[in-house]
Image (cartoon, rainbow, N blue to C red; front, top):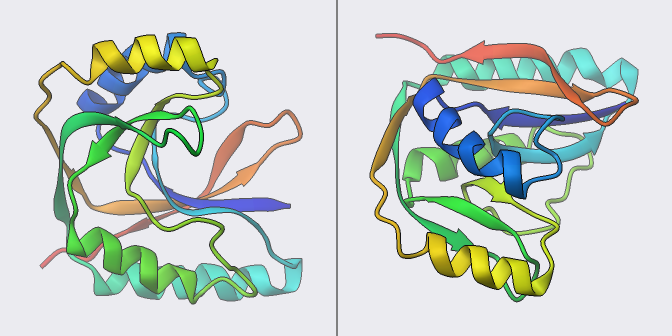
Length: 170
């Protein structure tokens, strides 16, 4: 079974992302707007409990932290993905780094770029038009992150929550 670890932002940020995803992201119906911490990975059934326990331990170590989104960005020319760019945040970078070591045989395929995808699988012309319009918009969205989620993928391609891990509260 395929798993992933993500952060779901709060409703205002999800609503903003979905206002674009409905039109520009064919995966809109498969998963809510999210920040991917660990992309899809396979884990043997006998190791799943260990992974879950390790994720619980990480969550216990963390305090809630804020993120800020100030613009749209793109992964062009690598691919035609448009996203909400999350300003660099040490808390988020550290969380990702801790998780990479917890997943058996997991090797990230790409460097970690915290973002929320709003458009993908666009043609080059559509990407250019949409991104050209969006990059002129002013955005200033903030959100408090206080949990992450282990997801698993269903046969139809949708993702659903396996377990939620809440950060400690001091």
